[in-house]
Length: 235
Image (tube, rainbow, N blue to C red):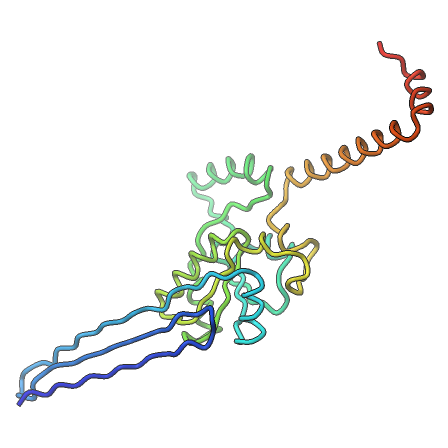
């Protein structure tokens, strides 16, 4: 005699930003000895939710989301949110095979020098590290600098069975000062800036200030400005 059964379980939505998780399982089989039971599974996976900084702040304060920072070590040390967990999606590549050495040299002479970016490779222990600290039911807010690494990390975690995941759209570079309590030598939105780009930015700021001061001096003190110009005649 055939036996038919079904089970359905769902995780309801506790936040305006999270979609529901629905898992539906059916099984159909016969009790005749020697016959196998055939299982049919249908699963609708929870989608990763992308939120802005203010919505992310509510997820942390109201819904109890934990913050997982997936940036590399250098950006994390420049600035990071207090009480976050650092699990880098990419780590510094210090391999010494010939191909890697060539690529690292080229990288350091351009992107590394100009933008202060490390030469990295995927972190082989990323998923294992997250699993060691969180269960699949944990509520996780994944953050990075521009939003790309957090999206990639969230997708990997979602595929591994994590059910409650959110990311900040465009990353920490879109966060205004004061939104989160942070630690580091700079603001969260500037943690991705390093190398000659920052030096150039400082030089531009100084030159801009000098030009503005010169303009104001000529405008409000034209006689003194003219006397100064006479001291340095045009060649």
